[in-house]
Length: 117
Image 1 (cartoon, rainbow, N blue to C red):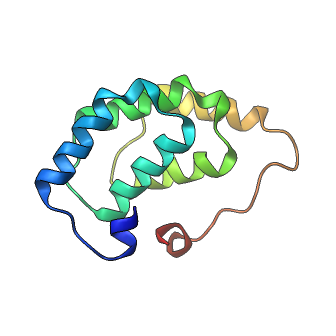
Image 2 (image 1 turned 90 degrees about the horizontal axis):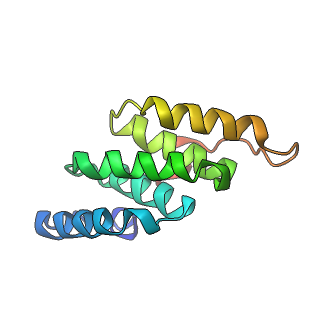
C-alpha cells in the first residue's frame, strides 16, 4: 500500500513474489491483514493471483467474527474495485458479522478517495 501511496508501480517480479508469499502464509492472516492486502492490490491495480484472491476470501470468511466494521468495508471495497465477485461463503460470513456488531461500533464509510490514501 505504501508504494501505491507514493504512486510507484512495483516490478511484476516483486508483486508475484509478494503474492506467492501471501499465499504461503494465508492461514496466518488476521482480519486487518486480509483487508490491507486486498486494498493494497486494488489500489496498485496490479495483476492478481486468482489463487490468492480465493485464499484471502476463505481466510476472511474463517475469521469473519473478528473483523471490525472498517475492515469489512475495506475488504469489500477492494474486491469490488478489482472486479471480483465475492464468494457466497464470504458474503454470508460478513452478513453474519454485520448482524452481530454491537450498536455504536458501526462508523460511516469513507469515500473511495479516503480509502486510497
